[in-house]
Length: 169
Image 1 (cartoon, rainbow, N blue to C red):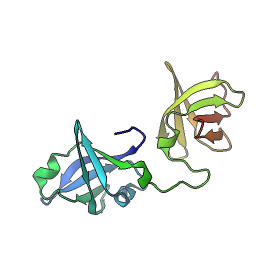
Image 2 (image 1 turned 90 degrees about the vertical axis):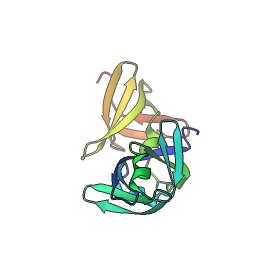
Image 3 (image 1 turned 30 degrees about the horizontal axis):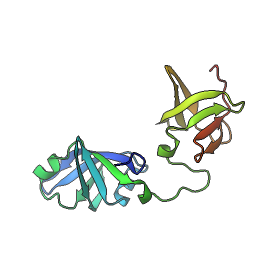
């Protein structure tokens, strides 16, 4: 399974009821958006299974889903802890100036003066704005993801992000 062909969008965090429904920890925003993507590829250790989403909804703070071919609690329990993957081509194309986090991870980051700062390792959601975690060997930088202020340019084709940031900070 090629690394860039699939994206992780959640995890099976529990079972719900007796008819095979699962509780889902969703990485999507809003959480229930995970239900729009079907089928899901469940991956747990070396085992994978592709299942269509039959039904689902928010249930309090959790998302619950009914998946094709999971018909009882015992079958669902086998997938507890499984990663939920979707094919990248299931995502809608982002609008101009919008990016999926998965597309930013791995970009080389440099200052407006061309000084390399490292690579985007992951992002953090803080409420006010997202934060890029840039790693360069043992050094880690936290840079606000604010386009046109700290993030000046993103070139996905060449794998580069340009930021207005002091390299000593």
